[in-house]
Length: 255
Ligand code: FES
Ligand code: FES
Image (cartoon, rainbow, N blue to C red; front, side):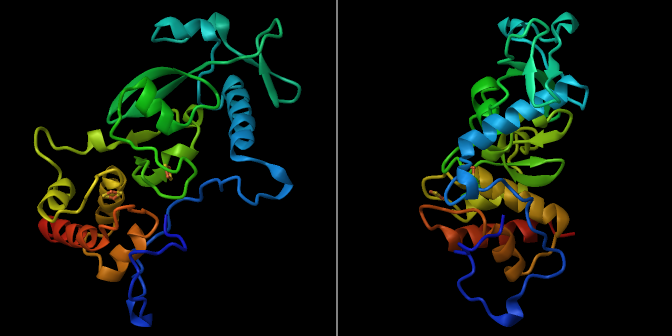
């Protein structure tokens, strides 16, 4: 997500404005710092999780269930479907017990998977902890660095700030999903060839962000790349190499 910390943009000439092919990443929930009314990120997630689960319970696309599913069943048990109470703002079983797990069908790297998640679990947590896809990194955990970038329906998102329960039936692609058979993707190969990393912690997010850019804009200008990658932060400051890697990937995939 392009942001004010535009470390890629070291030469912001007026003529270097990104071309029309550039597009901002989705809006992400802000962190807790300075939020009016004292709504912290944790409280936001907990509240949103409850609301999402309630929405799921009344049939808005995610199947919600009671914790009884969590023990290994890969299908929700209809008799345990959760119900919304009090105008859809709280969730409970018919006998008034709170719901602490829900079943959501996630399509990850082309495969549908039923996953038992807590309503407050982020997509990044579920990918890493429930599905073992540890290529998705969590760094700031508050939508500031984009280390946790995944593609959802082809668009880069910060998975640390999305609730897994709300991502049912969308197509999620992680860094594990972009290899082509046993070969690295063109973007992965370009990062290797151009030393587009040091510690590598930001690299999965960088690669996925660049992949989305090249899918939408196969011939980006340097300004396009700087703009599109500006929300992805690299603590090692490997920016010149990352820029070179994305340019090389664009050349390699140009038709
Ligand atoms: S933006 Fe998700 S870990 Fe930093
Ligand atoms: S290579 Fe270390 S954070 Fe980017």
